[in-house]
Length: 460
Image (cartoon, rainbow, N blue to C red; front, side, top):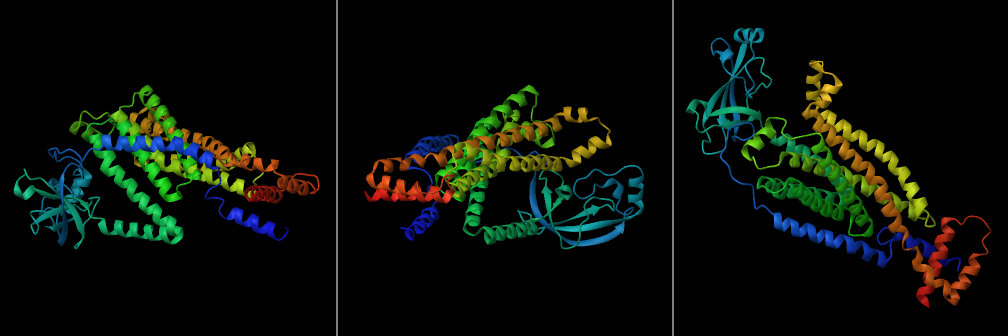
C-alpha cells in the first residue's frame, strides 16, 4: 500500500487543472453561461450592421480621400523665391507669424516633388514647399500620405498630410507576434488568434453598428461580451476555471456600466469634446455621444478586467492544489491577499496610461497656469477622470467577486467523496488514517486519504 499511494497521489494531481470540480457543479456553471452565450449570439445576429453607411466626404480631418505617394526629389531653395511665408508647411500646420515668419522668409526651404503611387492619378506629380521651421521635414525617397480634394483646382488637389509608416508598424507587429509565440508557444498562438477575432468584432460589428444608429451602450455590451467569451475560452480552454473568470468579468462589466451611466449623466458629460467627436456628431447627428463615451469605458476596461479575473481564478486554483484541505474561507483570504497586490499595480497602471495619453493636454493647462480644480472641471479632463475612476472601481470590485466565486467553485467538489465513508472498506481506510499522530493534517495526508476513499468507492 505504501508503494502505490504516492503514485495515486501524483496521478490525481497531474490532471488537476483540467477538471477540478464535480460534474454537478460544472452543469450549474454551464446552466448560467450557455444561456448568456446564446443571448450574446442572438444579439450579434440581430444587431449585425452589414457594413458602415456611406456618406459624402467632407474633406475635414480624417474624413478625406487619401492616396499613397513618394518624395521623388527634394531641392533646397531660397524661401523668398517660393514665397514660403504664404505657403502652408507640409502636414497642414498653420503658417507661423511674427519673428518666425520673418525667419522663414530669409531661410532655406525644401521644394519636394511628390509622385502619387496609388489611385486613379497614379504617376501624377506635384510640388510641396516645406518651411525650415515646419514640424515635419521630408526627405527624398520617403513614402508619404497625401490628401485628395477632387473639387479643388488641379494644382491644389493634392497635399501631403502625413508620413507613411506602414513598414515600421508592420515590422513591429511581426516582432510582437514572434515574441508572443516564442514565449507563449501554443497559448501564444491562441492569444494572437483571439486578438485578431477581437479586432474583427470591433471593426466589423461594434463600429459599423454604432454608425448605423444602434444604441452605443447596447452594442458595446454585446460586442464586449462576445470578445470576452471568445478570447477567454480560446486562450484558457473550455473548463470551469475559465467559466469562473468569465462570470467575474461579466459582473464587473455590469458594475462599470451602471457606475459609468450614473456619473456621465450626473456630471453632464456630452462626449463631444474635440474636433474628432465634433466631426462624428456632424456627420451622424443621431449618434448618442454620451452613450459612445460609456461604450468606450466598457470596452477599454475589458482588456484589464480579463487579466485580473483570470489571474485571480488561477491563483485560487493553484492554492487549492497546493493545499486541498483549505476551505472556502481560507482560499478566499489567501486569494484576496494576492489580489490586493494586483489591485495596487493595475490601478496605478490605468491612471498612468490615461495621464500619458493626455500629457499634451495637461501641458497646455500647466502653461495656462490653471488650478487643479479648473483643470478637473473642464469636460475634456472630466471625461478622462470618470473613465479612469469608473474603470478602476470595476477592477477593484472584480478581485473579491472573482476570488469568492473561484473559492466556492473549486471547493464545491469535496463532498463528492462523502459516500465512501459508509462503505466497509472505506472505514478500514479511515481507521488506518487515524493512526497518524494528532495535530493538523498536512495536505499530503489529506490528499492521500481522499484519493484512497475515492479509489475504494470506485472499486466497490
